[in-house]
Amino acid sequence: MVQRVVYRARDEIASILYERGDRSVAELAVELGVSQGSIRRHLDIMVAEGLLETTLVRQPRGRPVTRYSLSEAGEERSGADHYTSLVGRLLPALAGLSEDEVSGRDGETILEQVYNRVAEDIAREHGATVRSTELGPRLQEVVDALSEEGILSEVLDEGEVYRLRNVGCPCPSTASETNAACEADRYSIELLVGRPVEQVATIAGGGACCEYEVRKPAEPAGATARRIPVQ
Image (spheres, rainbow, N blue to C red):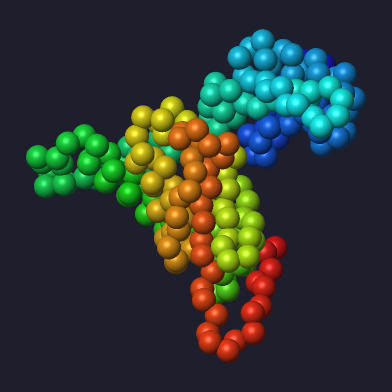
């Protein structure tokens, strides 16, 4: 029973780091409601197992603070369900390609076709839950839907644009080998949003998270600017 509680605590730590990004011991202790000593013991074990990486961040005053983030192995373990789901979509998409679609084409082009079909499949599956005609609420609906796929985690209103972010990557190894995986995520978002979506950063490309921008529609001449709240 004690061992099960210990593993659950580590799963919760991994989940926070996967969904929200790097954290300090103090931040994790507050979020989990336990002592810093308890959190530190779990973190030391997870570092030794190769699941976490550490970064020493200097502060304006006082000692530097150690921040913890998932390693590639930790990300793959945390995103295992999302990866399994992706594989379950890739195989039918590959099997569904016709001879004309693969004949005379290189592997990269075929892979792009497969991932495009996966993106369309994801958008089709979640389309019924994205109903709002207002951009702000619609983006929140898209985030809620695609969080189940490990593609998005939050939306931020930044004035002229909305910024969509995902801290964890559902397939880091695949994404590092081909841009088709990252492009498929962007494409699925764009299909659900119904507006152009620009990918501005990826974890595979060295970013701290995957980020996308959606520009707000221009206000008609003479119209009063109105902020659309994001739930």
